[in-house]
Image (cartoon, rainbow, N blue to C red; front, top):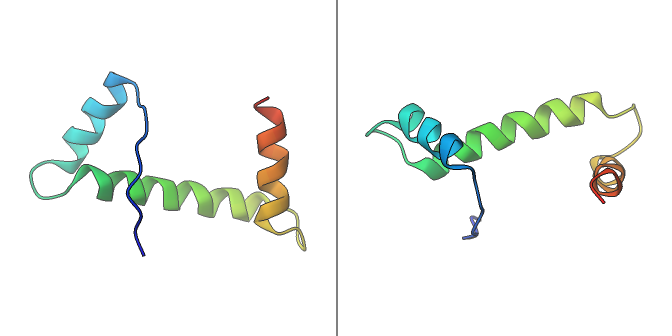
Length: 64
């Protein structure tokens, strides 16, 4: 299930997304692909036996 959301991005990032997307793809598809790849890398870095929720809490505490 997809959920509509609003995000704020730097204009430079949005321009690059548009270039990558071209006319054949949508911005959302490019962003979704990038985020899926990022999540996969983060999950691969998580210690064995530690689920991503614990890693998410650690990341959230670093941003505060």
